[in-house]
Amino acid sequence: MKDYGSNRRIGPANLTISKGEIVGFLGPNGSGKTTCIRLILGLIRPTSGTVKVNGFDPITNHVEALRHVAYSPELPNIQTFLSPRELLNLISHELYFPDNANRSSEIDQVIELVGLHDYADTKAGKLSKGMIQRLSVAQALVGSPETLILDEPMIGLDPAGVVHFRDVFRDFAANGKGTVFMSSHIMSEVESLCTSVAMIHHGKILFKGSVDEVVGKVLDYSLVELETSPLTPQTIQQLKEISGITQINVVNSGKGDAVAIEITVVEPDRDIRPEIADIVVKSGAKLYTIKHGENMLEKAYIEALKETKGGKP
Amino acid sequence: MKRAEVIYTFARYEIKRAIARKKVLALVAFTILLSVLPYYALSQAGTTLVPTIVYPYLWVFAILLVGPLFLNFTAILIAAGSMSEEYEQGTAELLLSKPVRRSDYIAGKFLGGYVLFLFILALTLVLSISSAFTFFGVQDNLYLSPGLFIAQAFSSLLFFSLAFMLGELIRRSSLAYIFSSAVFFSSYIISVFLSAIFGATGKVVYKTVQMYLPTSAASSLPIQYALPRLPPTVSTALTFISTSTLRPTISFSIELLLVYIIVTVTIAAAYFLHADISRKLS
Image 1 (cartoon, rainbow over the protein chains, first blue to last red):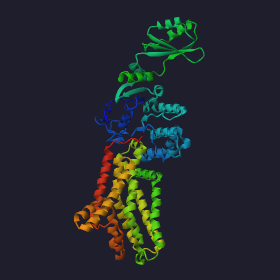
Image 2 (cartoon, each protein chain N blue to C red):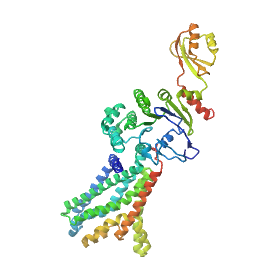
Image 3 (cartoon, rainbow over the protein chains, first blue to last red):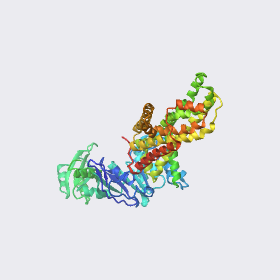
Image 4 (cartoon, helix red, strand yellow):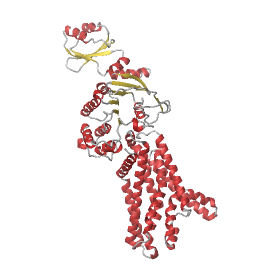
């Protein structure tokens, strides 16, 4: 546990992460995400209790605990007087991977992987924010770590960079090779990339599990979204009579005469899309799309915060 | 990897960092200015101002007169930002999240900064000798230069360690510079006052207090080393010009310097090893 005084305490937190997982670490500002990460990295001491990384205390056995752990900080503060190649060389070779005979080729590979090839010898002080973010991830990837701890790794990246880094992290964790533990505020990013999520609030872990598990724990409903031509009141009434449907919202989709319909279902485990599609088609309306509701993690996240704050998100 | 190699890596890193901050370039410029200009000015002032008998020993004056002020202040400028600037820029966090020992990091930073200081000191010595030779002819007793270099290097380690400690404790470079400079100049001014009061009253307590001030310890050793080895005329001139009125024994100076250095380095290391690593200032 870390006690900052003024009633701000982080922990006690118990979080088990398996190899091969990509864990999204979620929580509002000030919830304790970065503090947890800094405790894991031995940058700060717990006020009480212990932190173990790979079986070692990251304060007293810093080298052993973090030998296979790499970190990319939020809003990375890179040494501006070093170029990407110099920084990676400092970290991978000069500080703790001296015996890596292929270090030059490894550094070149990592620079290529994060898309910094054209800036490999440019001082970091002259790089853009996005390039600095890429360099931050590069310095974490170099040296073949087994665990990546990433604090908001997608901040500042362009859309192509986000897609690319998503693949990089997936590849890192593929087949149980490595573990990724990343904090993020971008729910869609976490939902599409992470195999599991952990939610923290007021320094306490609220939930940990797969995206579906966490959504199921927090929300007692699911959503079905469809785009159709306008439905008659009779058709809407028929839809409401399907077991499990509690609410139907119709809004203008903005695409010609099509309307967007959001249907709330209180039996999240049952897939009622075929029944809905059947009624819509038989009514003579055109059915353009039908799918499960998106951004459920975001909805679950906001709902969870409401519950812990007495209804206020 | 051997720990010595890691410390060496951090020392090189610190030198590179300090050079990139352009602080060292400014100090080199000041060193050149202070080591050349006074000799040039003296040479233009006419022979009556400087007795010709002193000409072969003028190189000593630079190190003994410039040393207590410029060199100790240079030590402060280099050391105060060594740790604090890395907290302010957030770069300490990146390095210390790697599997490296904190003790290696702080040792490397300290040594790297001190090597930079030694470079400035060596430059001061070389330029002083060169300038004295250029403007006043062949210089004598140059065999004293290695000893003077060591004495000044050890003396300036006091304010270097003090500023390094304050930089670590305060973790704000501007405040660390201000506090270190305040200690330096306060000690200097108090020393002058105490010396004057002792001269007027003859009470030993003033002299005793003065002897324990950090500026006394940091400015005594080079003079104590050089004076007995110089001709009496030069020694008298130096004693007259020098701001340091103290003449404690060499062993006392060394012991006092050691106490100051060990205490400040121990506090800096203990605090760094135990305290949380600060995040970048927002």
